[in-house]
Image (tube, rainbow, N blue to C red; front, side):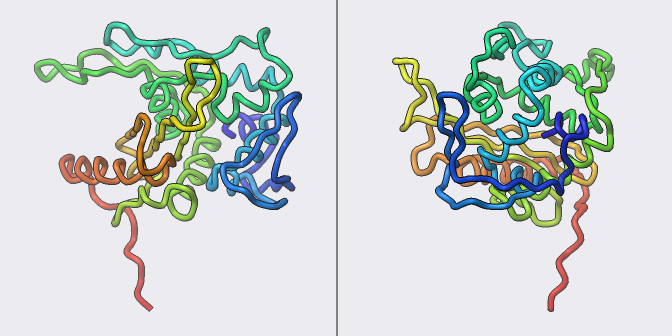
Length: 267
């Protein structure tokens, strides 16, 4: 979505007529929940995690530009965090893409991303479009451990558009369980099927996740919650988002970060 906004292919208000299923080469893509044909805006596609909407935007972007943006966000390579044995994750090189890749990679199939890579990518939205090299240690004996290195990957205007749509995810989309009284929250739910020993995507084993930014009006924290093989439910919005709420609430109080959301007026 960031790529399509940056390249002026869509705006948050751009609408698409989305069928219930989508044929991409030899694959038929479904939504997570059955629905009929719907007209959805880019904002709604983000808020309600529409697989078909996401792929439709990716197809407008094209394979070459999508692969370039995956690299731009740092996926498929180490972040440089100062900890040994960091995984680079996996991003399929463009010359190895098949006809169906444009329909699978946008919804998380055929790509492997580490939690620190995901948190770092969302921090770029929080930082006004700048991707920062992460570190585990901020200070040693009162002195900065290392000067943070960053570079711009997207304009501030686009990062603000994304931040607004991610706020919508928590206000009325799939991430309402991440809402924190008194604070604005932006974030995104994730539900990813794991790979079975036969190389196919599992129909019973999942990873549920939520990555959030708070306070959304001026982000201080990026928190990534990943639950491996949840039992009661598989959805990031019902499994990981409540954990985010508890972790974020504690840290907001511990760091004495003041509330930024206006109280709702009683009628």
